[in-house]
Image (cartoon, rainbow, N blue to C red; front, top):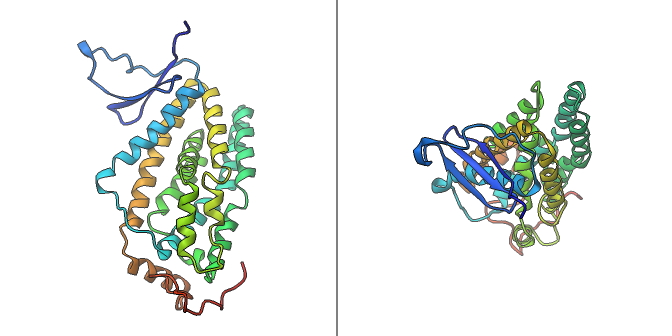
Amino acid sequence: MERLRTEWVNVTGDISIIARDSGQVWFHTTGGTKGNVDPFATPMTGVGTAGSAIGLLDGAINLGFAAIEERLARPDQTLAGYVVALVGAYHTSVDTPRNLRRAASRFEELGRPEVAAYLEERAREESGHDRLALKDLRALGLPAERLVTNFIPQGIKPLCKRFDDLCSQDYPIGCIGYSYCLERIAALKQKADVEKVQALCPDGVDATRFLRSHSSLGSEATHVKDTIDFVASLPASDRIAVVQETYESALIMAEGYNHELHKSEAEMVDELRQAIGEALPYCLSSGPSKDEDCSARPAA
């Protein structure tokens, strides 16, 4: 019988994620072994597998979000909240191709053409996604370019900075962990989630292009699988760094999203109004009623 392969990564100093290619995943606390002999104190060195890689990567995301679980905001979805999320989506996607190509160029210099090729392919796949967010904002009657120029949601700023910093490092392998974190979260969105957002929009308005593309309805599931397979093929030291960054990115993402979710609807509406410098075209605090005049909207 073939022996199960086990991988592990220390992510918090006292907590390690352990995964087997059978799909088993658990968290190990330093000092929690008999006789104080910790078999996971030494970094792993073996080859990876897709089964254990997904356990490590998803375990890192779960652990990152668990850190704020008790204070996680869960407000009802509103149109204003969705607009703020679209603006955030624009900012997390607009520089993605440029950043990935910068990281790819560095790996070419380091003699790692396989990593460079992977990042270049991802850059091509991510090109133009910012324009989807702009189209959705325009469909809602908003001056999209002015809005995104004048407004970056406070909770999104650390996430954008993290990716910029990762891709400019001398050894930017962590950018793969960051990208996996965002894509894995996006892939969790189902058709019902898209339909709930569409129900908030005025009749006849399609403002879910970005959301559909970044959900289980789009290509995210394929991207996630491709990343898992690629990470599994990396040397152990790279796999460790990618998983550790997946955890760090999940922490930042969870804190940032939670910050935005704690805002009242009135606060979000006020931020949007200030950013565009004029009255909003729709009553974003409640969504337009059937009798409300929504005809004066620019074409998407």
